[in-house]
Image (tube, rainbow, N blue to C red; front, side, top):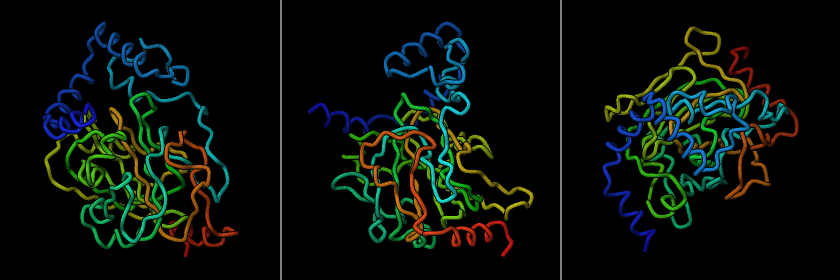
Length: 305
């Protein structure tokens, strides 16, 4: 009964207004009140401050500074193999596996299409058909910066306005097409492992979605789809990120979805629904027994072929 009430509230609450209010409050420097909120939040969610670069609450003048806190240097080692991809975020695997034709599993009994997730871009969706996906949920206690699974050249970024449902397991199990209806930022990269999408999903009270190359992308929330394209590597304005490098962050927590082309990688067999993830640990490996195909893909990115 309680779960039904929670889901019903997701539809009835003014999520946009609540999110804007929460974002404003989280940016306020309210001295003692801010410190109290941070301490209560950290205690309630059992936040591990020993991992933070600044472990003292007094180091954070706003709640957002605390929420997007960086970690201590080298506390998240990145898998080093040239054929290995790293997990992009701290959190829990919500779902992962094969994209069946164009359908991605959201939760038992619920799937959504690539085209819907990718804002109706059927050409882009076709490139990930029968590929692989990984959905990582970041809870309120988690580190909320998102990193690169592998080296990648950004080719396209698409901001898609949408709903702001919560993205926890309860909502994922009960709200159809959750990730294809929520606000999201789609980032497309060319990599040595084929094309990769890294998609940051908005949610209730997520004040903003930031990227390392252009900052906040949803501060206005104008209700229109926006698209940016980026040049080749080494050209003015190009965005090339290395494996393990930070690519974005959430101001209040959410979900990351990764899409990979078919026949390029195999997921780490130890990962399953419910697996706890840490940035830098093994996500996947190339399916090729040697690196010739990776070298070819890398040369295409570098423009040397």
